[in-house]
Length: 175
Image 1: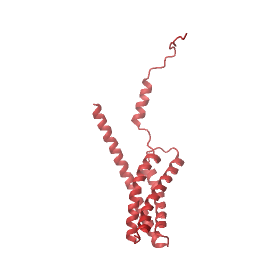
Image 2 (image 1 turned 60 degrees about the horizontal axis):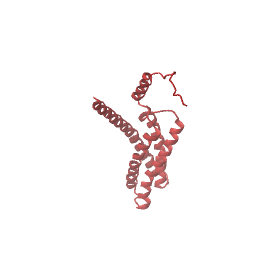
Image 3 (image 1 turned 180 degrees about the vertical axis):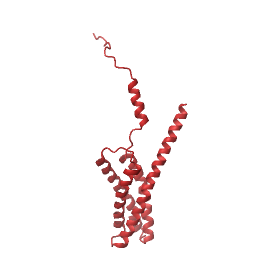
Image 4 (image 1 turned 120 degrees about the vertical axis):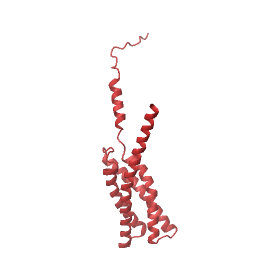
């Protein structure tokens, strides 16, 4: 019976992780669209160099993604300490920005691949690499899970079943 419970618990955890990944993907996919749209608009409407245009787009997409992650993907997570949450989100997003735009920078200035198609391909590749880091860091550090309801109930029932402390316990006599 214990093995069956363990297997059921594992299935539930895998299912929960799959739903989380799907929600992260929905927000992330919309964020990729925002990122690439802003990148191409800035690139065609201004004289900003390719990597600076990409940084502008990444910052806009980061703001969009925070709202999506907080209010859709991780809406059931701990909402205490929003200042800390936002600070950590911005820190890990900045690292993701460096990863994402480092790929584009290397392609553009390291290999001379600067056509609009090449820039979009390497921008997209950079987003993909940075997304792996962001998923791990956001779920681990930023949008922390609340304690599982079952674990809380189990702990509460354990505490309520504990025998009362013995007030008249005999102390050993020391000589």
